Structures are given as C-alpha cells and as structure tokens.
Image (cartoon, rainbow, N blue to C red; front, side, top):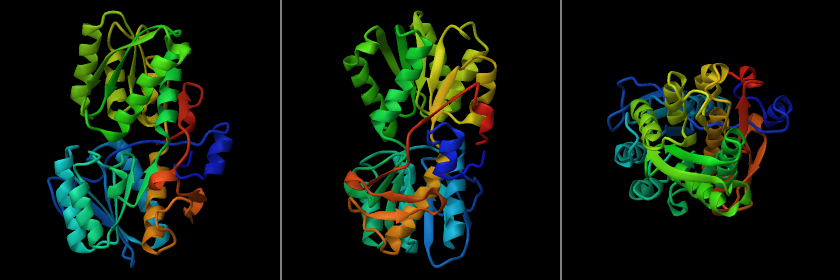
Length: 350
C-alpha cells in the first residue's frame, strides 16, 4: 500500500479506519549542523524547513522524515533533517540553536522533553522561526502547533482493548515504555492507568509494573527479560514504542513464553511482520508516521505563509491528505490508530 495514500484511500483499504504511525530516524552522515548526530537535506526553494526527530537511526522517524520530504518536494521547499544519536533533550538543544542562527523559516521537532527545550525554542521563535512539534509535544506555550498522531485517550484505549482481548480480560500486565520523560508515552500510560481503574471491563486486569527501555533495542530486550523473571504470573505486555515492541517480540519469539505471554503496543508492519506470522504477536496498533511528517510539513508551510496563525479554528490544506483544522491548544489531529493483525499486515509496506 502507498505510504502516502490519502485518508480516503486508507479508509477504503482499511475498513473505515485512518492509518497512522509513530517513528524516529534519518540519515546518519557526518554533515552535522550541531550536536552529535547528522543531517541530510534536499530541495532548494524559498521556504526552508528543518526536521529534528528525537534521535536518528529509528525506523519510525525514518518514515516520518520520508513523508516530510515528500511534502517539501510538493511545496518546493528547502528541507533538511538533523538530529542527535541519542534521544535526550540536551542533545536536541544545539540543533534548535543552529536553526535559529541560520534563520530557517520553520522547525519541525519531536520533543524529548515537554519543558527542557522551551528556552531554546523560545530563542528560535524570537528569530521568526515557526515551530511545529509532532509525535511528542512540548508545553503548548513553547511552540506554534502540535501535529498529534491521535488523542492520548484513543491510543490508550486501543492498546488496552487489544491486550484485554488477548489475555481473556484478566491477569497481570506490564508496560515497556521508552524513556521516563517521553511526553507522548507518559500521556498514554496515564490514560491507560485511569481506564484500568475506572472501566469495569478491566476490573480483573492488574498493571504490576512499568519499565523503560529508553528506545534502545538491547535495553528494551533486557527489560522484557527482567519483567518476565520478576513477574512469573505475567499474562501480557504493552509496549507503546516501536523500538520496545520489536525488542520484546524478539525476546518472546525465542523463549518459553512465546504463546503464553501476550504482547501488543505500537509498531510498524515491516518490523513486526515476522512476529505476527510466527504467532508471537496477535495484533498491534499504529498510525502512519509518513502521513504525520507530511502533515507537519504542510502545517509549517501554512504558518510561514500566514495561511494560519495556530489559533483554534484555523484551517489549511495538506496536499493529498486534504483539509485540517486547528483544535484547542494549537493541536492538529491526524486521525485514529489502526490495528494490524495476521489478516491485514501484508497489505501494508512501511
């Protein structure tokens, strides 16, 4: 399926659910414009946009950058991706500073912390840089717009729905998250905890642990092993991070727990396909990170040319994705999570 298909075609192809996704990454050449990572660039138009994911080398962000580059080409914009090797707020600051110094028109950033980046972002905005967050937000006062893949409630509910189905509505579960200060994942976890406490359908499900793999493959793998050793009655794991769910699936697939401990969360079809096909994972969810990057780029362009100011009720066209409206707190919503399973996973390629 085309990664950048329109919302209409996604609905038609996926039974009325818009496909969404969350990813990090990019090129890792040595032409760094700041920090300890790298950069890549394309285009040459009057509109200049820099994209700063949480870190490079993450397949999720590789896909979002592909979408952003596609939109930049359609807009005739000069586009570059930069980023650190590690997912920490300190590692992003130097890149934000460089964007301000270079006088870029817009910065698109997935924030590693909701508050720690605000001083640097304020400096960039003072230099007339429009700042659009995507995937993971800052404090709303720090940026112009946030491109949200889905609501926290929607993502939390979907993951609980999937794990409840897979464990028969009862038993111990754990969460394998990214970093302890990841804005988006903390919001999802808070919502899951609230729904577990308030929804009678989940009265027999107990969340016994939340651990952090820091979006590092080996650490996430090790944390999966530790969860299973520390909680011998564990029935299921939710991993709301593409790195974590793949690492956990890899551990489970070659262990005695395969088929006994359920795993779900947020992943990409290509990274999870083998684990769905071998029975390690029954289902998981995600949105289309390519569409997320694509939408963020069109939103940045609309801010720069004055089509929108970021106020609630503003609307703009986002190429083949159609028209979007700015909601409360300067948030633009891409859509709803999509569930992947053995019946449909081969219909997608990203």
